[in-house]
Image (cartoon, rainbow, N blue to C red; front, side, top):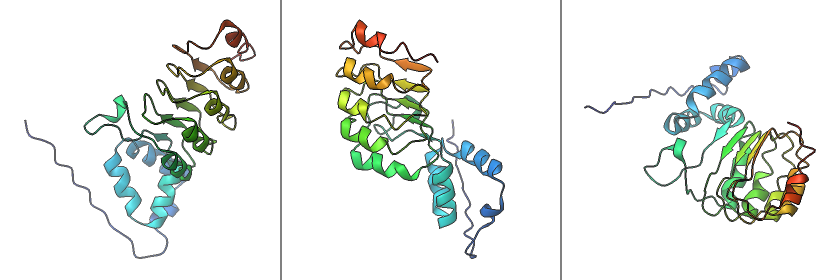
Amino acid sequence: MMAKERRCHIVVLDSPTTALADLPEYVLAAVMECIQEDREVSAIFRRVCHAWQETHDRLVTVLKPNGIPGLRADTLLHCRVLPQDARAWGKFGGVRTLHLKASLDVNDDVLRALALLTGLTSLNLEGCEGITDEGVKMLAPLTGLTRLDLGGCIEVTDEGVRMIAQLTGLTSLDLYQCDRVTDEGVRMLAPLTG
């Protein structure tokens, strides 16, 4: 079986503005939806010119950080995420979904930086064992969250759940294997009606 050869042709326009700026927003969004799952194409798109980079960063909606070499992005596990990485994601103003499942080094400092991504609607932190109640409190600015997965975040207690109860837009919350969350903590979630 022969491997597919991918060829990308890039034309860098000489003008200060590019034809990209003339496209309707819905067309740009459709282009981003197609390319954001392919890291190579996404990187090429960003290198065309400054305007394309800004457009890319504004419209990207899903971030899946690199994991272990050879691991597919859709099965992302055990990636290393440092606070400075999370702060850099702030330039992606359109990010709605962030997958950090079982990521190494995700801790309270990383969550402090993630609080800058105020457009997030879905955050997967499953198995990020370095997260404590202090980190969960850092999620307070993410009032648009509808889905939050903290399953396996073994340091989260009722105190963290108290903050989660303030995220009234949540429609899906996973606290599986958060053994330090008691029945009292679960009762605090009663105001969540989603």
